[in-house]
Image (cartoon, rainbow, N blue to C red):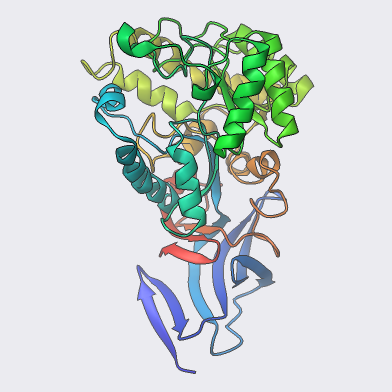
Length: 426
């Protein structure tokens, strides 16, 4: 069989008419399980999984095998962002899109956002709430119809009437209606169970609730508690029956405490988290997904005239600048951390900026990387398939120019992306 050698952006790829295994020569390799950076390794990929990791630079063993030369780079497992919104992206007209966009408009836009996310090195994401188009997007990615990360989606977020994810907030009285569990609005224990079951019927992978007010919803409070503890327990109990875990958006302290005691798996944002709440998270084993990038981006955009509605601006100024400080305190106190950015609130593809903010707040670079690899794998019950470069794991592999434990900013420029054994960026 004839083997040809091709070069893309300085990366040498040997291709064959009928390729079997792919040999990836890595100058450095991040061992996320043990927290080490290894040198001169060869990763052998077979199909969509990693077949072996071998010492030194091993050459392809047959003429049908192919070679990818990453000897000048640092190789890592594909990253996971535990908080994205792939249906949309921030822009000054976003609040009009509910009235001017059709479902197809959101769907077509989501395809581009998904590909941008994948090319930034994020081979898996947790999609935390949209219109339901996110479920169709996941299915399209899984079917190979569009390029994107592996998606775990909440479908529609659950809220109370007037809560952060009530889909008709700010509408006029002719349009506002009275949305209920089918639309993701919960006002009782009975509603809570029904809403979870509805999301299961719709095809969701997990449940997301808005346990407190939020920044970007056109509603007054950024942080008031918006579910009773009994309602949250009804959600988490029902979710468990369906194999779901529950993520809780929360800025305010009381709402966080109710969510933690109610049995949620993750707290998103956590801006006004007290030390008491941090200790409660440690007691219950609740993970914190900080979304520092979103906080910084919304506080910056709040200073642009007419970018946000007037009711949103003071909330963005109040909440946005505080998340990084809260994250630093929570990390030092021993709270479990999972990487998440809230991409969509800012431009997709900039997810890796979060690493720099985490390190800036006091988290070692290796731990920040682990928070985006092995930690999400545990939460998503993928710990034997995702988050590591090891035999039997998905062939989700990325590469950056430098050693990120020495320069974390290199994570913002991913040079190579493979997902499921297919090269998407080289």
